[in-house]
Length: 337
Image (cartoon, rainbow, N blue to C red; front, side, top):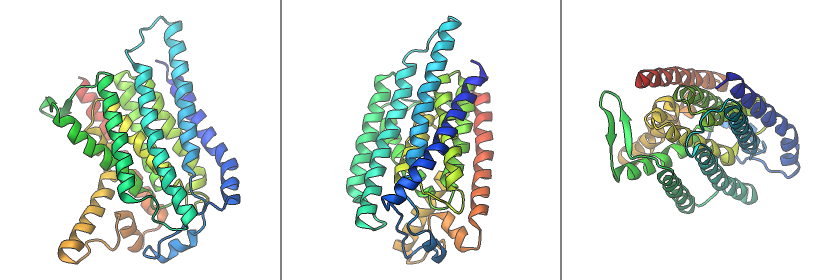
């Protein structure tokens, strides 16, 4: 498959995302859809009070548009060159987009409550968890319907069939990683930068696997994040909100599961894992020992309170993701040999 299709997809997504910002941000300001900053955070974060929320619609729209455009280009190329169409290729892509949009809707509900109630704590935690659980179950059911196996590729052990335990373990993993991506959105440009690199790495992984629909999807996610960063790098003119971070969480999971190499999710997404674990460790330590391990959790706030600038946090976390992405692509090459 020619490289120019991915290039076109990435450019379309970046341009649509950045261009949409020029329209959406003034509209959000007019509606006074601004963020409310918690008092417990770093004091300088209060300067961001009122920054428009729900900017995630920018890259969500661009990802869907660019992915479908890429799918159409790939279909035409296969038709013109009389190439075989992989079974359920389009349905699998639609499932990935669908689960991401479902998580976006949950995030939007959360943001809407924050804006209307003027408080940082949005959707009721139990209600939010129930909605997420329903989406997770439907997604796993969709994967099963499309012929997904219960086997997991484990280094040095090969494929291990987990049977029914696959769905239990993966349900917990999906729930955890979607919320881990949500936790990563706490510093200007952080979640967008990390996810850009994560998606770019998976674009290469899917190219190696010959799954061009998902390679285009991954490229669309990366391009959408790039366009969003035009508006979200420090000082941010808009926040993605839960609308955006939940959508990206869905994308992160969908890309990992579609590859059939689920263990690449915690490898390439190591930053998401660290962010989530820092929160778990902090809460567990405080409940058991009444002591905090970090100055503040998730861990990006610990570094922020330690004197790191937002630029430094984004650069270091992105560099770690880049290194992990290179390892993930290398692992895929080894797996295919």
